[in-house]
Image (cartoon, rainbow, N blue to C red):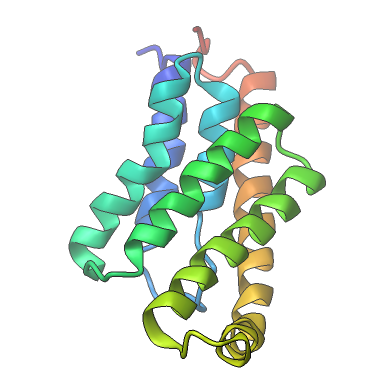
Length: 163
């Protein structure tokens, strides 16, 4: 049985998505990795941009939907766009993606849950700093695991991966 390249990519994405459903530290999730991996590996960039959003949606069916999800989904749309322009998964793209997520999602937290003052704005971002560490660690971990696994099987020509 031959495993096609696209099937292999989807398998990695499904595994990473399921990992969002198991207990984990806050923001230590695979969605940035899925966004960057999809946008750099899929030829269809529309499908690549929808992939992390679909993963979020499917896992949110179990985790629940909240008003903040609008900002979370928006942030991953921009992460995909960033990945498209950078064109590869590396330290630079992962860290910029983490920062982009931090800025957009916490803007949503400020809008939805803090006083609309400069003090409220700074307090929101200050309170989010501990979560930012988990975001960076999770993004680095998942991006490099997905990248290493994919590269390993691509090099080994696992089951004659074809396009």
